Image 1: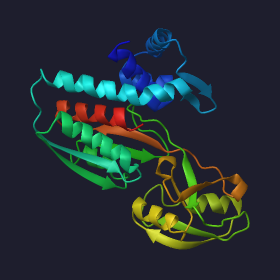
Image 2 (image 1 turned 180 degrees about the vertical axis):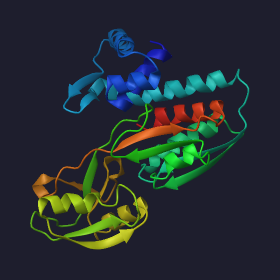
Image 3 (image 1 turned 30 degrees about the vertical axis):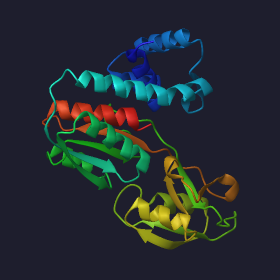
Length: 277
């Protein structure tokens, strides 16, 4: 086993798709397929199974993934011992639909590797991030949206209906809806989905942040839509059996300002790719 095989494994696990993982690694699909087969042969287990949504981790793959992330992080820390320390400033845009654990892992790894770099982070709606990248106001950004942008993609994530753990929401219940009070692609999703199925609802809560939406859901005040990773303690997923339609998945893309310092953006992009899964 070597770190290059583990890097391929992590990329496939994050992307759930060989073609997307190959683009992330700047390799051909056949090349990373060979690497995956070699790793599985070395370990004597299958790491993935094919499903309706693409590749998903097997039980063995689930066990390997956190260890692989740790090994790759330690390899980068060892490499840093013999490279010049990075300094300067980097401006990053991050979606506020990111689950907090991911954000902490990304920033913690980058700070550990590059303690001399000042990180200026902007968190919130990502609809303005592409223009900010083009205008040079951001160096790197993670953009959420209904469609992928560019080649540097993170794994798609399901968008789900969520209610408070003790909330009683049946198929005939008038839905108390929590909606984002801002202009972006997220804002009309819940309303449009319910309108399409004829499900009756009322607006019970408006907020400009996902943190506020999740708080209202946990409190039992409203039903809302969130990325699957945001389903935390005090929340439960609602399904078609509860009268809620399936929603399209969320896509996240990494955009980089080509005029920004390549060493800084490259290192932060790797931290995002390694820790966003």
